[in-house]
Each structure stands twice: as structure tokens, then as C-alpha cells.
Length: 358
Image (cartoon, rainbow, N blue to C red; front, side, top):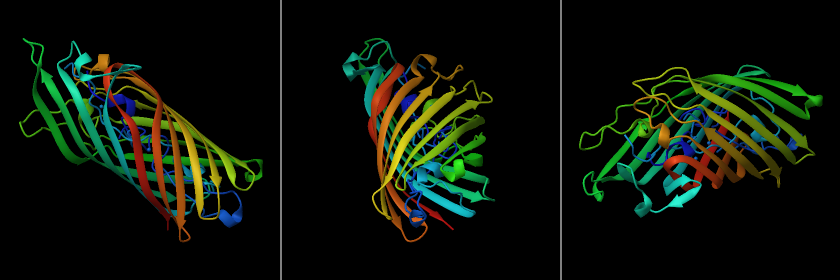
């Protein structure tokens, strides 16, 4: 049983976060010219993470996690491309402390047939995304996630079957970096547009973190997967008057190789949302985020305790600062969680960030 893993893993793997074409920042901006800089916000829980991003022996899934939020420029409002450099800094808090089997919440006393009882995996993620717009159609982005993780589980004595010693890992490390290219198209005179994106998640994160006792963390807990993953997808936006818009995005990420007998499961994400501008400086966004992850593969993986499907509701607010910067905040609340085996899942996740064009 691993402890939390797939339900919210990121965010450093393809989701992570930047996972879906740039899960790095998310913001509503109004279609009307006077609201061009109204709002740009994003918010990934990576974990999904990128997840970005991004973004996971028989112990419940303890998992790495990022927020999974739609974040391309369609989520920023009018969706017009920016020529030149942009930066997005996002801090996420994803605390996984609830044990789940299938769609049922468990208590620690209900855990049987496992090597350990997972207690918590607390993730604080800093995602830095640098992007550059070459022209009206093409742009490129690089996302660099840093993960601060605290995982605790209690070993189960093989002879008595009773809880024994605790094991804990605490570390702060760079996770897997993602590089994504994007091609945008405009239709219906600019009222609607769509974009294709694709790229790679690179194996820059460590896979050999040990705790103070010298015990190596399981692969799902490590800051990196050790694999190179391909990421591709499509995003779309449709303006509804001057202050509202519908947005959507779908993405897939798949590991191209295994590393030391571990290959993360394929990840599919879909997001749909609505953005509304209350004024030239304040806006709101509501997203529905669906994430499905297949079980991991390999001798170091835990197929029986990895793989999940989740649906989250993510309301957010954006506040523009100056002509080209935006502050944003998001709350991500799960409304449906189904996991394979026993895993830790979050009750809620938070994201705070700042994005700016130069």
C-alpha cells in the first residue's frame, strides 16, 4: 500500500503540473481590450504538480503530490499571446492525511495485509515557470519544481501484526523539469481559439533519497520518477461577451522508458472552467478537474496500490497588480476520489502565486 500517491501526484510528473501544456499558472482575463491585463493566474495541488507537472514493497501509496489546475493563457482571460518573456511563481500546499481504499475512507485500524500504515505525506511545492513567446503562434516554456516533502508511516510487525516503529522522510529537492512547446490558432475572428502543445518531462529529480536511518524512500515518494515522459494535449477558449469565457484543456503523459525497474503509469487529465471579470482588476475562475492515472509498472512499483481517478472543483480569485502582473489564489476540493488498493489522499489543496510578463 503506498500512501497517497497517484491521487495527486504532479503535479512533478506531467501535470505537474505543466503537465497539461503549462500547468503552471492560471488566470482569467476579459476579452474586452480595456481588460487586457485583467488577470493571469494559474494554480497545478502536482501533483499533479508540473505538472506540472510534472509530476510516485507493499506499503500504501505515500505519494508525491501537486495541484492539478488548468493554466495556459486561455485560463488567463482573452488568451492573446505574449511576445517575450513571462514568469510564474506558484506555492502549493498538498497535505495527504486521509487513507482511502477504492472510494471508501479508512481509519488506521482498518488497514490489514500491508507492511505499514501510512500516516501522512505533506507537500509544499514551489513551481517556477519561465516562458518565451516567439510570435503570435509559437511559445516555449520551462518549468522547474522544487518539492519539500514530509512522509511518515508506521511499520507493521510481521509476527504480531501490530504497529511497530515509525519511519519518516523529510527532504527538499528539485523535482522533474518539464519543457513544453505550444502552437496557437485563432478562429471566428478571435472570439474562439485553440492550441496544441507537446514536450517532455525530464528525469532531473533524484530517485535515491534516504532518511536519517539510511533507508531509501520508495519510488513513489522520490522527487523524481527517473523516466523521460512525453506530454501532449489540446486547449481551447470561447469568449462569452466582454467579461466571461469558457475554457477547456485535455492532456496525456506517458513514460517512454523504465528506470531501475520502475515506470510510472500513464496520466490523463481533463479540465473545464468558466472565468468571470468583476472589474478591470478582480476576477474569478471556477474549474472542474478530472485526473486518471494508470498503475505504475515494475519490480519497484506497486501496481496493487497505485492508479487512481479523481474529480476536483477548484475556485480561484485573481487580482491584477500594475500593468502586467497578477496575484492569484486557488482552493482545490475533491468531489470524487477512487484509488487502487490503499492510498493517502488530500481533503483539500491550496495554491498561491504571482505571474508577470516582461
